[in-house]
Length: 234
Image 1 (cartoon, helix red, strand yellow):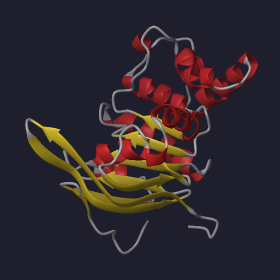
Image 2 (cartoon, one colour; image 1 turned 180 degrees about the vertical axis):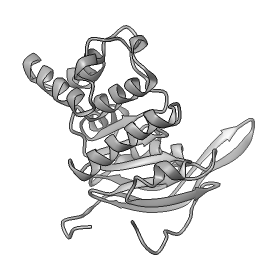
Image 3 (cartoon, helix red, strand yellow; image 1 turned 60 degrees about the horizontal axis):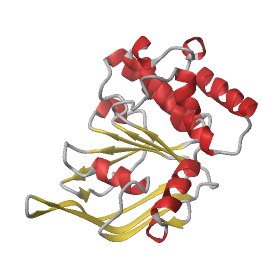
Image 4 (cartoon, one colour; image 1 turned 90 degrees about the horizontal axis):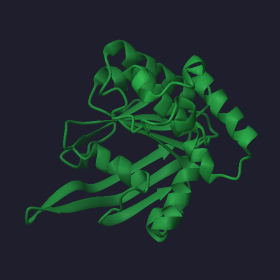
């Protein structure tokens, strides 16, 4: 990493507990994590290990039971729900396993959605959307609806929607989980390009070692506990 790096994520002694069927479930147990600017972190672990829970805490979608989550210098616990929503729209790009596209909208309109909450003019929005769709290789599909696209193309639209606002932090939750190997490879190459060429900080949840190989660092969660980092990063 270059000397310009500075942590964009600080997670200090974070625990997350849920009540389920009268029992307390510990999803995360005293997790400590820091992520530097420009990192591409693969967060690995089996199903139910707390990976998605941690990602949701970083996005301000959920709140921790104990500890502190600081992202981009902001203590997320100090923001109200509406402040969190505004903060998230400015700073976070979220990529879901299930694409989460609006079926009645075209690829262009899906990608434009986050920009409707900004002060950009219509022509500025159009330019941003077209540039971003070009980046993910879908300029020729911008007027297609999700049902007219393959799964891999849908996920590329979802990535374009996540990055069209130029977020500081991109969070990807099993982004290749619903895709065949070839489509998954395309998605991983796009994420690697975003990291290396556009210097995006990325946290990707995956249980797939092949996907994790695209990242610059790996960390493993087991039953809510973040294991010690390996001695060397890639």
